[in-house]
Amino acid sequence: MTPSSSATQSAFSRRAFFGAAGAATLLPLLAACAAGGATPSSTSTKLPTGVLKYWDSILGTGAYNDLSKTLLANYKDGGLTANYQIIPAANLFQTFQASIAAGTGPAVSGGYAFQAFQFANEGAIAYADDLYKRMKANGMLADYFDGVTAPFKTDKGYVAVPWGMDMRVMWYRKSLLEKAGVDVPTDWDSFLTAGKALAKIGAFGWGTAAGPGASYGGHALVSLMINNGGGLFDEDGKPDATYSRNVEAMEFFLEMVGAGMVDPASVSYSSQNLYDSWKGGKVGMGIVNATLTAEAGDTQDDLAVMSPLKGPHGTKGTLQYLKNFMMYTNTPSQRGSEDFMIWWLKQFKGENGFFAKGVTGSLPVMKSVAKLDVIQKDKNVVKVLDEWQPVGKGYSARGTTLFGGLASVDAGTAINQFTQTMIGGKTTAKDALKTLQDGITSVLS
Image (cartoon, rainbow, N blue to C red):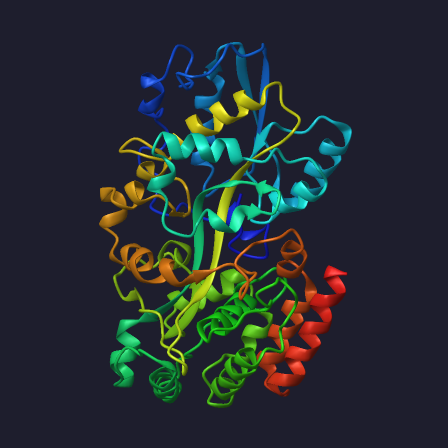
């Protein structure tokens, strides 16, 4: 359903985004549903009897899953009911792969960011073009932020529908910048100036983590490339790590390393080590997820989201992941799967939906959800949605369409080894990127 990390891992264990107050109560949306709980389209024909198998993994604190279980236990759409199964994150892909091969997989599921593309390549995904047409007709599609559905369109059709997103954004600690006597950076030059000033007071200007299981280090470097108009792939989806804009971005990062802005110990940091460093006041700036205050347990209003930096060529950008739902060919009714998806996506909306309950651990992709009070009261989240979301790009940047091979790149060893090498500082940008290019090419082949 997500990644905030190496495709499969950290988003499943992430703490609740806005807190889980009231999360144990049943979503009132259920009361407004048709008998049994579903809200089938008025144009639906009579559906066959059967069970729609819906699979998901643990999200946030698990409060979302508890609510989901209650809702789905009451789902009924004509002759269809739903079965809810939580798949452990540790063996998510293997479970899906084995079940799909055996013909016992789900009809609908969440999953990690690139899952739908992988299983579409195996012929297991039911393309969602008809669902998109129905969502356009009923007004749901117009509620999405610009650009968030396009990455799911392949030459054969739409493989999935987004419900939330995860962004890599630049945070800073107000008190440390004030102590260092510098303003909040707006471009690369002022960022380097601020980082050097932070180093003089014993704080790091680029908080990161590149230890086993940590993905923020690699994500931050890819975000820096995207910020400079680069990315690991060209416009046609071919590996292009050695692109000149990437070289320029990594030379800038090596300059940070040389200026003492990066903690050498972060080469072995876990994500929790990074959160602890933020909370402990050791980090003044850094690119992490948009839920840093919740992750670090620091809600003292001293951490703030920076506006996207302007690169040397005037570009802005960052890495964005889109969380999504997908349909499979193993279903008692394709129309029934679509009815379910429309109903399920509505459970994220409104004053009583999942986002309003604060249990998603995610940023919204729908405009109406972004306007909810629970979203609007968090000025950092509002800044992310207003300033970072419009310049966010997928892992396939400079291309615009995602593909299955990205899962192996994002979760692979090449990007982690590249990040550790860069933090060590004993390399050139071109050499490190050439090794990364070879690693990506090898994985994709």
